[in-house]
Length: 373
Image (cartoon, rainbow, N blue to C red; front, side, top):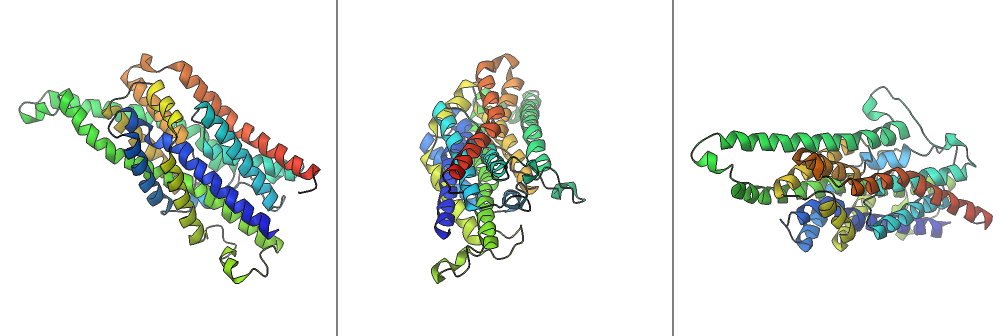
């Protein structure tokens, strides 16, 4: 059983690596599309700030570890977690191959839900749907931490993209009505040059926000695996060189530092490998972007991700950046959006949780038939 725990941890890190190169595209698509940075420069920037972001919080990790699967109903065994991870990994690879910016976060959550339901023999109480603790920010469950932000974060990304874009234009318009050097600041050449530099900052902010939110999801998976292994006695009598696997405590907020550091580094390595198909979809196919548009989209998306991470909400980097780009494009020209591409992306969003969940469900059922679960 200890071997299986180690396999699950390895699979979690594979998921983190894939999340890095899958969602790298989401975090750097705009800065590449506007030609402010080359793909290699953008990937290096994203990897560095992914690493920094991943080291600055564990609220989302706590949600994944303790806020989705009801461990009083279903045992969070290594087999369950492994099937959940495989469901997320397989769906991520399918959408990456097709060039669709689907959500790694929702793929992982879908995998957890599907595997838990299979383990509980379709008992829906295996999932924590809603748990109110007085302060809404600390509420648990799929309703508060997954479904509510799944709906609101894309809307917020779209609206914030529109608002930021319009505020920037209002500022430029105000400068154009002045005289002297202030008036020169409103000229297209200066605007492009200024936001070309500013977009490096917004791309770094986006990379930080991506690491801050997304890296924590795998931290939560590893913590959940170790909590389950500890409860089942699998971690009893560990050899000294594996003693670090013992959870510090059963407290949901205690994510061991080795988990945080390992996930941060693995995501950064995945980020460094890139994901160019999705960059093409986000950065080029939805709407033509200029540096000012990229700055607005990245700033809007990163703000959504950072706020969500503060409240322990595992929201989708894909959703936030895609809808921010849509919002910027809509503000620029409602007809500039290519609705056929938007439609493909929306379908990928709708299908992600049930598809990854279905894969995980089927895998666990297969393991049960083979007597391995």
